[in-house]
Length: 203
Image 1 (cartoon, helix red, strand yellow):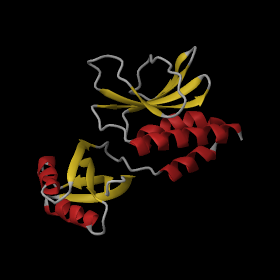
Image 2: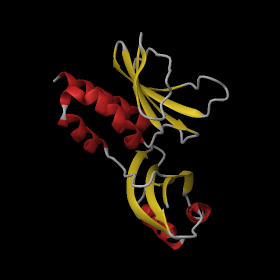
Image 3: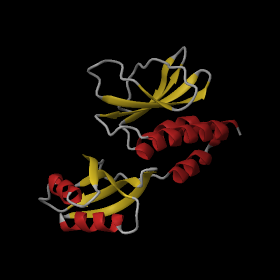
Image 4: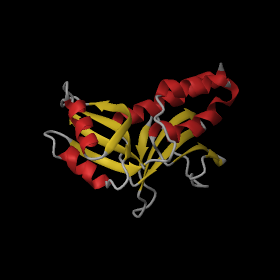
């Protein structure tokens, strides 16, 4: 069964190797690794896509990683079967295939690119004009000066939101139910990809 693991570790040579060894000893097989963020405090956040051997519990992989000095599992979740980590450059390549459809394609790509549950394009007057299958049918437009996290709409809302401006009347929103929190580098990437999609669509 595939799982996606987000791990915090020291940003020094050998750290990722120690984590990979621990995952392997606990019954996990690493499929792909992506660096999410490198921090000023000397730590890094990595996303690890892995398959588990039959009978392996994800708790055992978490425990194996957490037992390493300076390593902390931030989050682990099942990952859609057949899912793969899509790097930003790969997303841009897909956007350029049909420039006139770049904004539509952007919404389709964002959940995979950011491991989010859904993505939507929201218009100031029309509301949600495009959304992936799990996106809400209604979402309130928010004036944005730059890419940012959005506050949950209600106290009981467990979805975390990030959004970026497309133009004066449209924004893109992505949502993760239950986490993990969108880190600063992801917010910046969302703004960058959204801006590129607008540029490609207008080219």
